[in-house]
Picture 1 (cartoon, rainbow, N blue to C red):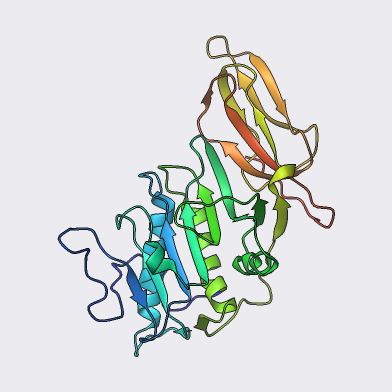
Picture 2: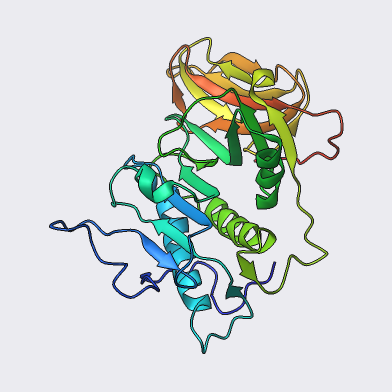
Length: 296
């Protein structure tokens, strides 16, 4: 998608469009939610981050998206995109989660957070006990993986939870991909109007279920050298990485892929202890085709 009027990586301080609505929580220095789009309508989209200090990727993407939506709402904006429906962004530092009163009645509630400590994860959409319409809507993001989990109630009551990167580290490439995916979602959900995805940018989307997920853990302590990055397609039995002895440099363990599929998670730190999670694979769906090298 070509997005006009905003340089790649540019971030500006977002201002709410509705007068007097941006503000700050009464009696505090915490910024309140930012509203964008036509006044007098209930927002259709709510975006917020996790509440951890390591959610730098979600904070960065939402700050950039807020700046972009503010730009789109300007009457003299050079972009061809226009907001048709209101969007609210709950910025980092605005408390742990949006209140239920704020979220009530908003159909698209999207939480962006870092994965559990230790892994670097490919940008993906997670659903929890979804209905059929939620499964269909999750595909509107165009991210490489949609993973369906059993019903639980994630913090903030999101309909869609987007996981990317690793805690405490900014992943510029993942952030760029997610930013463009969010803009594509807003277009496909008719929240934004304007140019659509170009024909030469096909989504590489695959749908998975969590019960088929396979994780490989360290059988010994040592230094992990991973041979693939998140996003690689791997074959069962293929070596994903080797664990070397911390003192003599010898290979103590080679980690094979347990199944063929998409590598969605890779251990961040080279130093590992026995039992540490190292790799996460979503088994290849029968209809999936293609294979990335993923080789470092």
